[in-house]
Length: 287
View 1 (cartoon, rainbow, N blue to C red):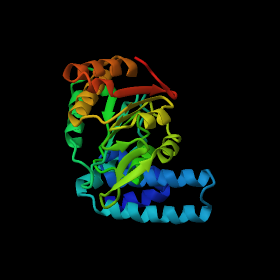
View 2 (view 1 turned 60 degrees about the horizontal axis):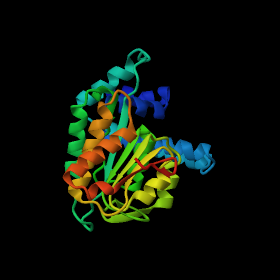
View 3 (view 1 turned 90 degrees about the vertical axis):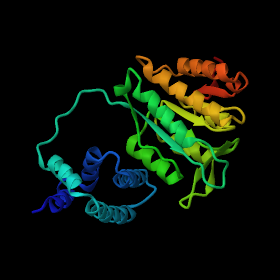
């Protein structure tokens, strides 16, 4: 039996969810399987929470099985061989090493919004992590540069990131994400509050204009937002400094990283340094 057919047969032996989890371990940057895993976990959550019934569940799982096989057939031979070697070998030993804290960068800058430097911001944050003395304790997940609400929830389900960072445009009532055809779509505070209530994050960083009220609403732990319009250059200076400071500490200190990154911003623009705010458990921290 060839490796591809062996992998497909493992869907019955291991279970489809376990198989796709194994594939995501081997191919962590493959967005097809990552999104499929997120959709499957969401399907199971909806069943267990009573939102959907067994009939809906079976239909969704049948579609997921077909999608899995379709995606498998689009892989190259080296990827197939890598998956085959993992699922055909002995069970992998349980690792006792501490799991890296994941940072998820999502952004939206559709053509019908003012252009901002989201790619440059991601690169600066990525560079800050690469030179961090504790870089092995952190991981930067593949970014979403045209994030939709569906993609956002899929990544939250699949990876449960430690930090969620949003770069883009905001107003007092929410933030703008993208639609499937890359138009802007306002996601209101009430919707985002429902989404994040299901996940435990250590920090939500809203690097967009007028996001402090949303930060307050999402601050079950830490949340960072802006109390008015923020200049594009200032937002990049502040965020890259924040992640550099945070990941260089022996243990994450969100408050100290906020204070020091704000000081770095103040050295470039004192007025802009008055814009970032940090919240914890619904309370603004006057640091």
